[in-house]
Image 1: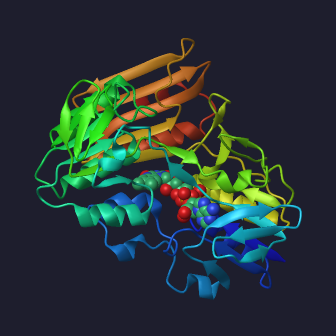
Image 2: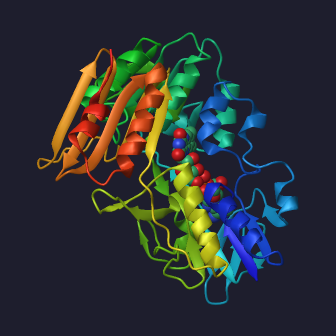
Length: 401
Ligand SMILES: Cc1cc2nc3c(=O)[nH]c(=O)nc-3n(C[C@H](O)[C@H](O)[C@H](O)COP(=O)(O)OP(=O)(O)OC[C@H]3O[C@@H](n4cnc5c(N)ncnc54)[C@H](O)[C@@H]3O)c2cc1C
């Protein structure tokens, strides 16, 4: 059996591991556009900021591919699929036959149109280790930095850049709050104040309308000098390759619970697929390392003939900036007129619980220090409960003194 996997990250590597375990004799090939062996993508900002050494980034040991007998094409793009003859065509002019193919091509950064962007001397997106290395090499104590986007990646990059530069780091965001898909106004305000105290300057409800060399012109007339300019406004599923095989796409690749696409013997997993939001029931992209890994495992099992369904488990996400934790689960900032919203604030601690018909719709907390790990535990417990009792609600809302 010949298995080909496109993408050498969480989803692709977990699938390859499952395939090797299931079948000691099969051929496994991974094709990767990137030049590195598999690394922990969520850590690249911490690496850029010098918090993590390069050795700590590698997700599997040096000998991983040799030990698992996986043939890895690095620095190579898969450019076209022929689903009838079952071939995949590579940028180096090789043509690989496959029996079963996995598309684990992840996501690509979205860059909104900005007049004059090409004139900026040091513009980056921030999705790959290559980007992290370029930014790391180009910053110093005197660097004036600007970031477009106050989402997870934008805020992480802002914090890490503050480790280098004595200058303020500017973050420009179209929405009126930070982490707009996770936070409500109250949570955002606490986080914003904490980050401002660390030298991050926010320009909310604003955007970059024009770039003139290293000068950024904002919508409100502000002009920001920026030796380095990073766009972190969001990602889009990387569906280019799937389109060459006319696979069904709805923003991301559409898969069933076995991770099968609309084309026979072609599977997809990770950030490239569209999944269903457990709360709203609408198509959604879940950009989480652990979800990509679990989907890759599921795809690998089905590719190996072990019929398995992927059932997403609601998870608690804990992200921290300058020691302030944003802990969230389900639709954390949901505004549903039929939902009951319970909130509690004490000092810089904040809790929000959204409940509808006795069912949890969303959990959100801002917490620091030892309290944060307690909140994560409580949220995990709440997700495992079938209904919300008053006792559980009181416990979730307790902010402590
Ligand atoms: C800075 C940053 C911080 C993050 N922080 C967190 C976090 O705290 N927690 C969390 O859960 N998640 C986090 N994420 C998200 C997480 O990294 C992703 O959800 C995860 O990497 C998705 O894995 P994947 O295997 O689907 O795809 P990806 O990791 O995107 O990998 C896809 C790979 O496929 C390659 N590829 C694409 N097209 C082709 C082609 N045609 N030919 C060959 N190769 C191709 C790409 O180059 C890439 O290497 C973060 C991401 C970033 C960038």
